[in-house]
Length: 127
Image (cartoon, rainbow, N blue to C red; front, side, top):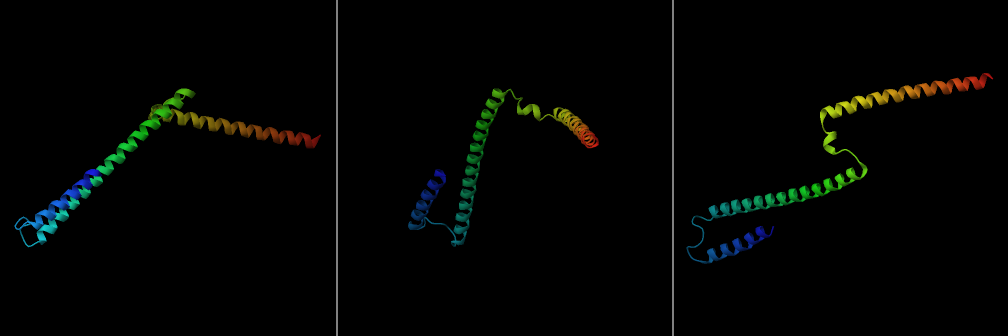
């Protein structure tokens, strides 16, 4: 950002000096000078945006590195497998089939418990 501001200040002062010198200004009818000035401003603005974007990306990259270090510390502390182990497709497929089996087992367990509760209620009512 400082480079952009410095270019603007120096460029403006240089243009004012060139305009004060006879024959030192732009050649042409003046309309061409406005176009080149606009083009230069557009280039500088684009350069400024690019610099800002690069700084933003660098900042986010550093933050993500810090987060990953923190995550890894937590994984180490609690003996949790790393994130890369969870991202493989075969590992995910195995987890999915295991999860499905667990759901079916839990459903059967709930179903069995429900039927036992009904039997208990009926035996309490009958006696």
